[in-house]
Image 1 (tube, rainbow over the protein chains, first blue to last red):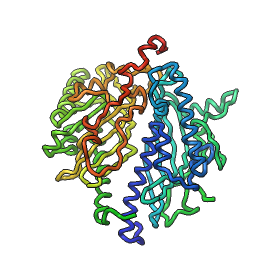
Image 2: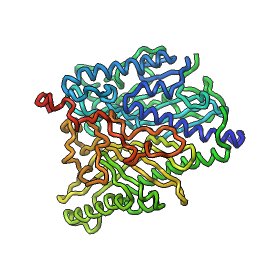
Image 3: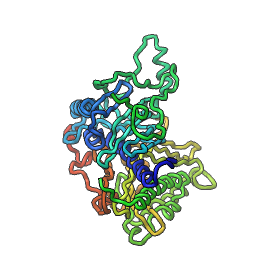
Image 4: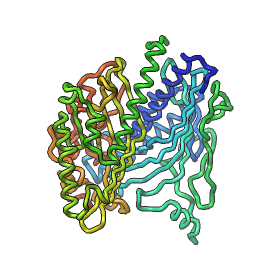
Length: 246
Length: 257
């Protein structure tokens, strides 16, 4: 109940918790339009301590995060558009980024803790999300389901809540209601001609901390608690963060 | 940074946001129980000036005013349920039906003046409709919910709502096998929507979220029409999308599907 804090701080922290929820939701809606520029320009701290991690590893510092999350992501969207326009000329004149796909990481089951000092917040979410697109180079629309867990750290800069750390832990990625992730993994593992597991995300940008930092579901693996929910804490430090500080 | 609100004011704002979240979550249960009349009576605006401007939008336009909303949302639905009972022989409505539209990813913006609020949610929904041959049509429905809320004398109420569908496909079927372009004429949700007060293609999922509607709510001080989720706040994209051709007709015949 945080009764060691005065009432004013507890009220401030309750409001901060709602602000953090909104920042996280903004991520979902910006990403749904593949608008990486808005996401990283508006809701991220530009601190050298910021980080973004996925199964492939962790990017550290705003420069590297921007390069991997905005520059390379936009490059994929542009390349997709260049191929797509040959098949569907009506994409001409339209922003290539949302044309690529709607990657909608819906958010449920949030656990949010705001630090006693009110300067940071930590949160855990599950995303039973979907990724869908209509105009594709394969000339088939698709809808994938992508289930992940998030460990997210936030800081308050000049009264605005910003992302500081994100750790994305993908568990399953498969076609909506058409395929079975466990059967797919079993078939892959028992195939006489063994194949590597498919990548759980588009691309693998340069990282400072190499992965793997989380393993997608396998019939051979146990559940992983890679980003445990945050406990109540006083201030952000190496015992209370999803990215250890260097 | 200078604090704008007193502790008491800030606590009231936190409480308002929680009440708005509860309101939209309650709506999910009203839908699940198919209590549409109760939803309109309990959750939507009841002050006369707000009832006149209330709106319910989907991809194809808006019903404006609570009478028009009720005509579409309650009366036409009841008529369809009666027709369904004739086909299935059921003794009561909704036998074999299911409506699940859980709301996730809430983004709530309370106005600086505290009198209105805006919100955006996403639903990975499913609906099942019993058919006359003993089977049922079970569907996945992905959609955004955008809503304006206004504080009336008895609490927060839904004022404007837009439900923008992204896709609609039969459960157990591979969505990728559907024709690439949506055939609106055979879309069951469009058929159900009927003829709205204001017709407009507000969201064409052919280009995913390119059209930007419903838009993400920004922080705001006081409500005005240009930020409304009612028809007055809908501004068609100057690049109109598929309805304007924009190259598709010129290249006709080159499409594989």
